[in-house]
Length: 194
Ligand code: ZN
Image (cartoon, rainbow, N blue to C red; front, side, top):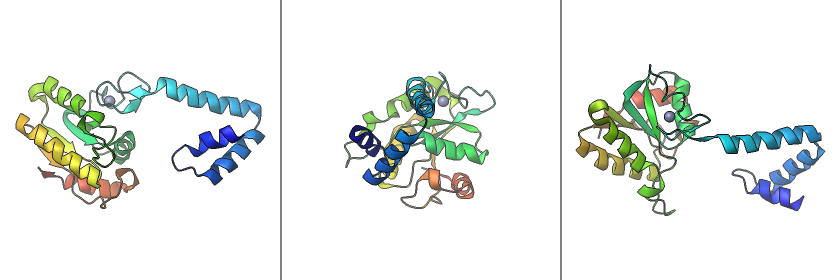
């Protein structure tokens, strides 16, 4: 029981108290349902991996957006994580594709350019040559997000590719996934060239 509580408490957003409550609930659940839950966790962990093109989390080799020929593959929106991508997907108005960095640069936490998927983005731009018309930087407006956006624009602009940043309709320190759809679209429409 102690082991279960400490494993649960190690998950994000779950404190010692909630972990205790969850553990208590789990041991009262029918064995069949516990088995189905553990199977779902193992299955997700084994089968979900990074899309080979955009590095979002997906259960296929290429995610549904990258493999959709109707999307505009010349416009790439750079986001921090899969949840940010999902937030923009929910608006249903963005027709380009994405690149998911899987994090942001943070000197405080010792996260440098090599710890997130920047190399992979550059390789993608390189491989597509003139095929890319715009890179939209949609990092969160946190200190880390801003630092990453600056770093990226310095790298990408010399390649002759238009680099834009979404307008800061997204509240400072606010995370994209928590921002409502209208604000997201306003930020996208109001993007400016870096
Ligand atoms: Zn993809």
